[in-house]
Length: 368
Image (cartoon, rainbow, N blue to C red; front, side, top):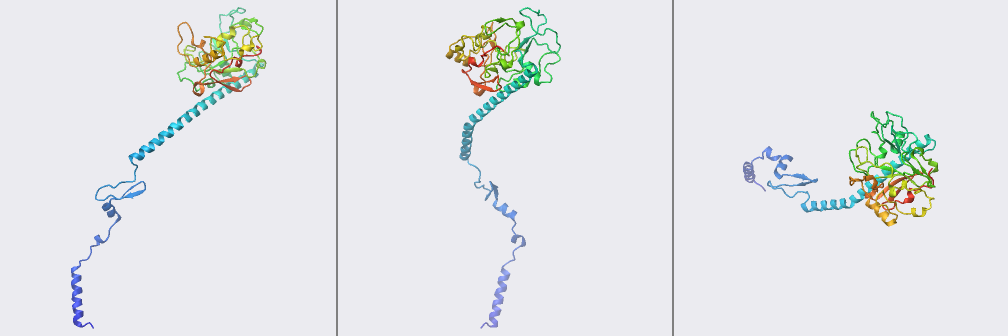
């Protein structure tokens, strides 16, 4: 049993212990989140917390140099794989864009034909107020027209009038040609008045200032040359218009446009009698590639194909005494300079790889 003396001794001991233990200050009892952060230096990176102790940063969750190099290498590999495919897709889009432009020309041509009793336009009509009626060099429409001061009125102008409200400016010169004649796969230059990148078949779209030859070899003087009838042009697969080179020395103002008529194609075929008529005596020799221009003419198929490749370029300044558009009327400018587009009589568009543009593609069975 505890005695009174024991209880007294226990009370004395408890009092001594209580006197020796001091109370904890209030500010020391409460620790805040801010004080913990200040003490341990917690940081966040990539969604994870990394403690920083004693002022020294511990490794965070960022990329190492090796990891970054690996990522860069993977991206470079993907770019090298995808870039050719993207480039090919862009070229294919430009090819389709050109096909669409040719179809627009075909639609404008059909509008013109329906308004003119089925007749096609001239390829080139010369206007010269000094011409004398009945002379070999008489040029149609000699009456002065303030809205037409062009020396030559090309088929491109005629078709543009079908789709453009205003073609000529106050000076009577064409400065608002339809954008359908401006191909995207061309050299981007500052054009003086307008841009055209297509040429026409001279047998289907004759001019009115050069003699023409009928199928039987009869020569017609310029003043008696009449436009063809669309319904008389056979076969329906013959080419009307196609891609042509930009000629630095062709009007207006050396502005890198195409020569509007392919008059020099295959050694200036327009002037060679009944040439380019399918039912001519020499029809069998037409099944070969065409010579692209008036220079270096050949009838050897392999050489003709080679000349198409050699002449497949937009024209630099010519040598003295010559003009660049004599060299080629073909421009295979699509799909990395390998494909040419052409519009056929029946309205569909054909593609030709360089070296495969055939003489049969431009021959007709009748003058129309």
